Length: 116
Image 1 (cartoon, helix red, strand yellow):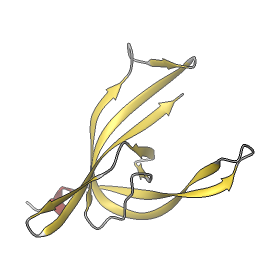
Image 2: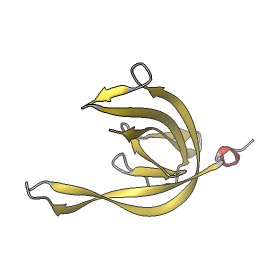
Image 3: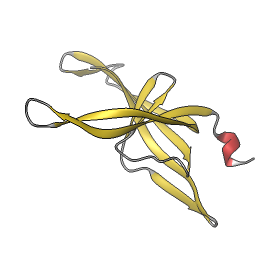
Image 4: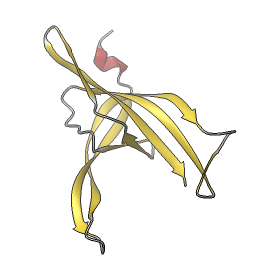
């Protein structure tokens, strides 16, 4: 079974760039929709406290995913992914995995934050 046959989902890369400055002089983050790629998205876990995590008097649910992308995907740790209507934020630097012939695929941990 080839690696590409395991990539059964489609994700869109939302490339991060700098936008205008806000009133405090901070540069706003802007996410521009980019190309779509075949991927594999697998839920790792959901975290909460007693079913929900209380954050500033709001219910927040965090769900973690492992995402596998082809080695050719132009992906950066500051980018986001759009998958099945969910925005996934990357946690840490993506791992670029090589095999004996060169780059093979990209693995990353991403999280979806709902609520809050």
